[in-house]
Image (tube, rainbow, N blue to C red; front, side, top):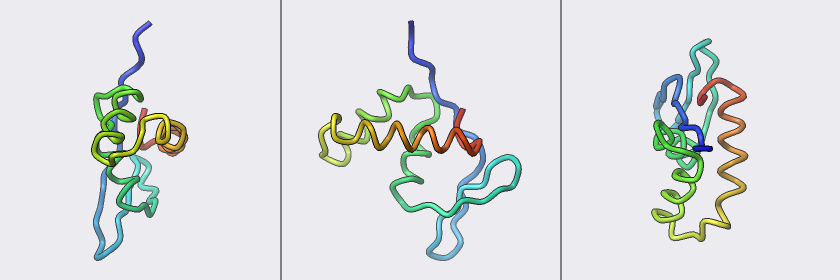
Length: 83
């Protein structure tokens, strides 16, 4: 079975030095650059594609970043920023 593709929801807002993700219910979540980057590259990709992409750009092994990224994607889904 093919892995589901992620769909980005909400919006990214920069307020000075702060980065905020705002979901469709207008709930705002302060995030860091890494979370914002993962959220921004997720649209249309599978979780494995996100892991592999981040692994390449960060020069970190995929097996090292897989679990944290899976946890982050789960959290973003739980607050309606990804589906």
